[in-house]
Length: 404
Image: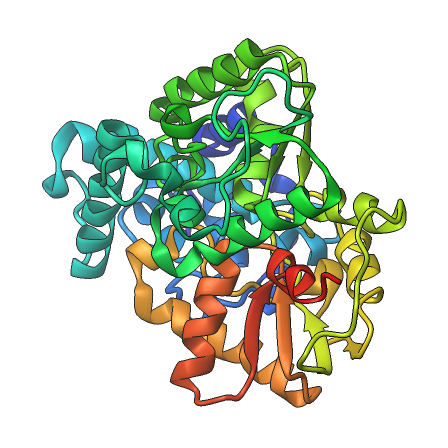
């Protein structure tokens, strides 16, 4: 029996993201580390194999590539450091740009889950392009979280004398459930004497949801706008509490612009670590004490290499015993909220999140801390659904509790 082999897809993938799919020899380590593999018709290793044989239509008309969380656990397990996530991103761009946005649902020729999920992602893209945020609300409401602050900081919007520009992000800015994160971060910065500012309504979505929805081209305008706004302020440092925003600014924006941003991009955990180390924050034993564990956000840990800073901060809070879960650091299990899966298949998100909550319960944690608004949202919902008595907090919230 003759084997028909097309190299077009492999060549396309290598040109787009640099991944050489022919290095994959089907050891299945990527599949074993993938939290959503059981829900895929084609496991990560099979996706690689299909790319090797040029089976573009099979990949483009199946939901498997959209059930990837983009967590990059596959890369950690791969002997050749191949990233199924990057292959998936390329395929999503191809499907969304060349099929769905051109020919609509009929161009997908897939099952109902694929058609429904891609349509939802297309609508997400429309909301972001129209309103500049994921919620579809008036973007001028990005500072609604400040309404409950005891006192609004001076220079909150576009202060050119600030030391730090705080890029709040869509989740924290637009979802009331997450307001506590920017509120806590603002309180901590104020207590440490750090003068910060925001872009206010001129802050647009970072574009990460569009990247994962196969709409990187549409995200370019957002990136250029955001960078121009920060450059215009002339503030030397930009900070994000959202790892996806951080990853987009730190890794993707320079690629889109083809040049350095001209200012430093950091995550809030790095700022908190520095403030604690320098003695600018006095921490006391919180009213509640117990056992705390840390969940590594994929975009901050595995994909950006920031593991130590949040742990250094946690260990400085008196009254709590710090413990690690079974899967930590580069091997940490995803919360389930990555890769736009919440839009494509929300039920699958909860299945993954339930596994992570179970790991926290296993080490008898009373508090599960992360450094990501989306992780906090996803894991909080899972804890309630599983009726597990674990409090889920962002690191900024945990530190605010311990302020003297």
